[in-house]
Length: 331
Image 1 (cartoon, rainbow, N blue to C red):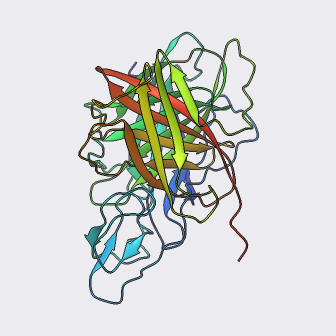
Image 2: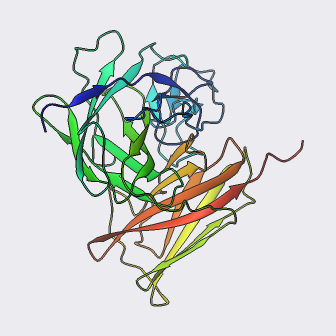
């Protein structure tokens, strides 16, 4: 497991509105690695992190920004309209400090095979100072969140790598079937903005027929549980949205949800082409369900898959939904 074969990963600019990104300018608020296919699959493009245009709105000496959406800036305290996080005081300029981060991504074996374990290893680096260690901040109780999805978005996995003595973050994983998968790394260097990495991985072995999503699917059910997703306004580009998920079991409201990663719910939203990634944070609330509230928004129209993770009875459950986002309303 120690002789990992390095796969070069190059950072490219992102533009999504998620809580999983880092800002280098007031217009482009995230960075991501160029998709890396371990077996040289053709036709992959650089991902983008959806972020609505921000900018410095304050005229005073005090500037507040979202730790997960640095392009969201204000001259007064408040919460981020995209993810609900509390704005933090910052003295960094809107253009950022010029630092660019990248991720060295490796796998052992270099060619993953369905049904066989593979060890993924991640090494965050500062471009131009690749040998220098990059300490990571703890965000949602972990230093790195790794999201793995099948290319058709029918499969979703949330992993947390372990820091090793070699300075890598390692996580074992076993793919169920062959085909293309997308791996996202969600991390924040200490004292810096949030970063998002993305690679495309081809897995050898038998494949399954891709699932094609077209219509909205706002209701999920499994093992007696049901979750219903709703929005306070029509879902369209450029509109701040309040999102609610109501959880029931056996037809009865679930009022004793437990925290998962420090919150009642963990939501990830991914566009159908997998190039936009949105990490949404729940609002603060004193109850434990049955309703979990989120704030979000979209920068681009199209179909999105929504993955919500909740903790009940000591078990993590993943509900999935499908949402079509309309273009912005005509002025």
